[in-house]
Image (cartoon, rainbow, N blue to C red):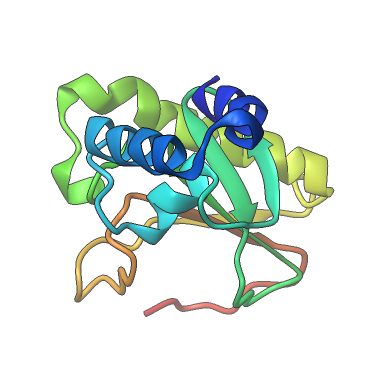
Amino acid sequence: MISFARRRLDPFLPPFLRRLAQSIFRKYYNMGDCIFCKIVSGEINADIVYKDEHVTAFRDIHPVAPTHILIIPNRHIHSVGTLTEADETIAGKLLLTARKLAEQEGIAEKGFRVIANTGVDGGQTVFHLHVHLIGGQHMQHPMG
């Protein structure tokens, strides 16, 4: 809803008001300089394949398989390690969106992976909670 309003209003706002609105948006959502938060807010372009009021999904710029989509909460959450009981709905939404996108991408029937890297040792490189939806080929095993 907010990004829809921003896209509609930005062309009519003078630059100083546009910057002020972006600053307020970042502070409200605790975004700072997070690249994923900037994708959610529309400050950085991405190949967005799904967006609603809770999550945004976009194609990974360094895919490891024919289908490689990142699904992120629109609100900044650092990682799986910082989820609380209050985040139960968003955690479920991430997984349900992965299933929905797997069907949309035509990979649901043969199988896919959903991965959430957590922390430095877990391979997390962007510290905004995200899950990778990976499929479209036979996956290698074991992982790690």
